[in-house]
Amino acid sequence: MPDATTTARRLGLPVVLLSHRAPVSFRREGGRRTARRGAGGLVTALVGLAGQLDDAVWVAAASTEEDIAVAREHEGEDIPLVMEATPRIATAEEAAEGTGTPCLGIRLVDVEPKAHEDFYTVVANPLLWFVQHGLYGLATSPVLGQREREAFEEGYVKVNEQFAETIISEVQARNGRALVMLHDYHFYLVAERVRETCPDAVITHFVHIPWPGPDAWRVLPKDVRERLLHGLLGNDVVAFHTERFARNFLLCAQELLGLAVDLTEMTVQVGARKVSARTYPISIDVGSLEELAASPAVRERAEVLEAELCSEGQQFLLRVDRTDPSKNIVRGFLAFGLLLEQHPELVGKVRFLAFLQPSRLDVPEYIDYVGQIGAVVARVNAKYTREGNGPIDLRLQEDFPTAVAAYTLCDVLMVNSIADGMNLVAKEAVAVTRRDAVLALSESTGAYEELGAFAVTLHPFDVQQQADALYTALTMSREERRGLSSAAARVVRENDVKKWLDVQLADVRALLER
Image (tube, rainbow, N blue to C red):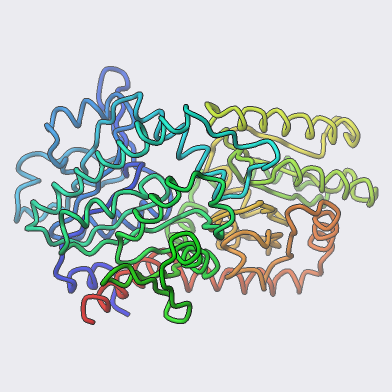
């Protein structure tokens, strides 16, 4: 299959990308402007694509004061960036055509703060996030009232309209013909608006989080859920990480909107158009991660961790997560405590290292969850501390190089999410392990479709089952560990983030050729 850049060039279309988070953020440090490149496989893949095309622009929200300053300096025009290790704004000479300097154009949208707060902290997070991850306890929550109604109209709808108008301006600047690639749950209303004005655009939307079945969406008022679905149906392709999510989307169109769907072709009829639901499991940039794992900085961190956690034949469990209720962290620690209670011979022999990044602390449910995490860790450590060492080493920090060092050393990686669109931590760990780490993986993650056959399965609500599964993983023979770990790593390497993007663009090309 041709690579993404080749396929995109063959499409003969400029590319307009949209995500809430920009590939670069600007800050002012020590009186000077600095730029920091975003992390993760998605940014790497899309920056690589956009930076190699003759005409591509990435639209995103201005998220810092310096982002806003940069956007205003460019008066709403595209900002040409040279995507070096430390990104920088291109000079006029570098940005001129034919100079040979590859630039990525970004367009930073300055959103009015109150509208953004309603859009992001009331509707997108937590409302859509909680609905799509099945996090509401429906007996008591959510309670939707005038505040949520106003936030939807004055926040989510208005911000989507603002981004849609920005996309429209970029498409119209390209004679109304472009490939528009929308990303995630922040922008469900954009495609329909863009299609109304730019009918010749090819529009795709990738949903990076789970898509539940029709009953879950009935939590939302009828008019709200129908507007969200109609908005997504403005696309040519709506893409998901798993077949289950794609099928759920079609069932929602059928049951909630009364539209005709074809579960064999995976399409829904919308007037004279057919909208396709497709499956593209996202992955990681394996080469970049392996390079980081071999770097001196990560090697130094690995030596420290090895001395702290692996001395005298100790084993260690690892988890790397945000403090999001969907990650099921509390039940994971309860399962570990149960493991130690039922297998006292493991006390002092197994440590549990948890890197947890505090997340969305402006949302009350998230603040409460951090407190629950701290409480369960304190109980387990109080009961099983030996010689001054608690069995759980909890680190509330974001330190990706140290996390990668831990990937290389851990015996078991625990991912017991309630729901996950994919979970790239699972793929990262098996790609760089040096100790044939066993993956203990929730059946409710997108990653399970690809890696479940090479993992110990976790049932996210069954704490006893999780404890038993962890015991199986920790006592597995070296040969069995090596077989599972190498098979999982092979799947990840053969299906990296480059292939994820290649397949999408190849499908768009096939759509154009029909």
